[in-house]
Amino acid sequence: MAARKTNPDFMTGVPELLVLRLLSDNEMYGYELVQAVQDATGAEISLGEGVIYPTLHALEEQGCLRSRRKAVSGRTRVYYTTTAAGRKRLGVMIGEWQRITNAVGSLVKGSSHATA
Image (tube, rainbow, N blue to C red; front, side, top):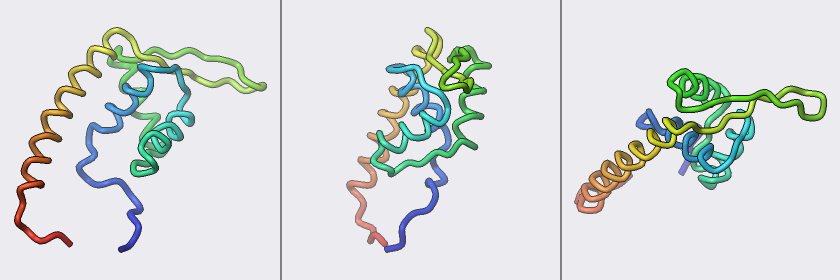
């Protein structure tokens, strides 16, 4: 079986969920989040900087994240953390995710169709 090179098309919304979840535990900067997603998912999900940074910016605009600049080894990094609104949004998203994955899991588990 060929190795998957990209994430499935049905991943819409997942970057937001993963970013909020990871930032609810620790303040992180963008590239650190890229690595954290890969590490936390056993490399099953790989979100590049082209996905992470727009997600961070959108969540910050929505008031779900706040950022701060921090000098590290002569460079300035932007660190993000969740706000109360972000933690609330995360709770809603987790509930939605569990409801949908349970429903899809039930259907897939009971499927009599052949798998490829």
